[in-house]
Image 1: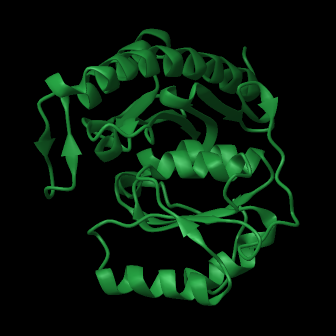
Image 2: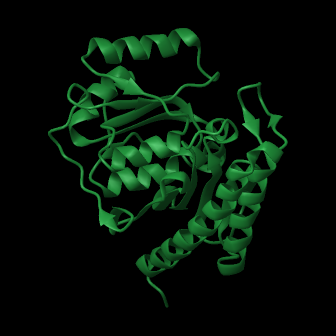
Length: 271
């Protein structure tokens, strides 16, 4: 009988293979995006295309062939319950707005949860030829190079990523930016929360904060950050909570205290 770690390693291997295949399909759509029919979801800024749906179908079908007992949650088609302890959590194209507007800041994000915890996280950024990969207890890598965070970096000597959407008010977004700047920090927003979490794991950003985010946007990035030596604020995944949004905060060791304060957390708990 396989151990839990062997089960995780088998899913990591599949996630890496799928991320490459899905990234190639998405990149082909990106390079031919003038032919895409763009639809809106919640508002004109919340867009989707056939590329998102086809890539999600590809990933789901690959998982179903190899691990039919696993659950699957994708941004476009929702949750399919499984009978095992594993749930795949997928954003086929995170950063659809940059994608359809011809900017390279998008990625394929694939996570696997076990008992609510992200145990596999793989992110493919095809336009940058970058594959971020991680699994519980196995560390994190970027194109095969081990990622280890520097604990001397803070919000004052590095850059913080932020995210925002219409789930939160403009006033709230303004206040968090003001607090970050007043604390001596600086920020960027590139349109893909999953990719910015990968950048935290890679040490390019010292942290990331978005007041409202879904599991498919952040679970792969959480695994990467943790395995690189960072921290993330717990995201509830029990039952229906898995499909609901929540605040996302992830940080290198030297930024945990500041970002927790800016996010209004009364305490911090390592995940």
